[in-house]
Length: 169
Ligand SMILES: CC(C)(COP(=O)(O)OP(=O)(O)OC[C@H]1O[C@@H](n2cnc3c(N)ncnc32)[C@H](O)[C@@H]1OP(=O)(O)O)[C@@H](O)C(=O)NCCC(=O)NCCS
Image (tube, rainbow, N blue to C red):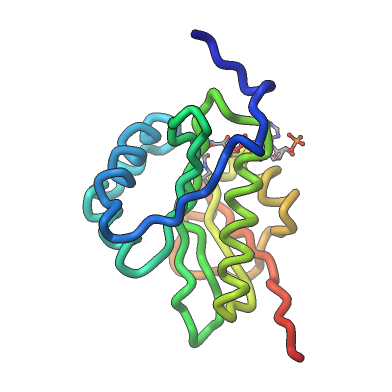
């Protein structure tokens, strides 16, 4: 069977927010998506520990297609109450399901969720050469940030951030 991304209807995709009991599912998706990243996550960190850390301290949501396939994932932290800043640490969409708005759906989920938890802004690090991701984030309202959050390699990466408006009523 050949699946094509153009036929993917986002109505057929739902997001599952994972709990600590879903560590195996998250780890499986991380292993599957590892080769899709320009710099494999497994080269930087242990995937099992990464999954555990996310599920304990952050939020992970997996997009599941009506055909039962896990096709996308976003992981983020919204626990920095002192700065009110959320941070997207991982986003990966199955290559067969790209350019259908799924990356945007996952990013907007992280934005809405973080906003509902009282975060004032959301940030991330993205590779300078990762044009598709940079365009996606820009389309969600992210701009290249002046604020350096930690010691990133500015030759290879940039920070992008987006304010999250809070309802003050
Ligand atoms: C980056 C990534 C998540 C985008 O996922 P996606 O589901 O294809 O993105 P969307 O369909 O929601 O795209 C939204 C917008 O982003 C931009 N965009 C996404 N992919 C693009 C591409 N290959 N070329 C140009 N623009 C692109 C477009 O503006 C697009 O809107 P449009 O389709 O209406 O033109 C996906 O390519 C991916 O998983 N890449 C590998 C992992 C990665 O780099 N993750 C980001 C780490 S920071």
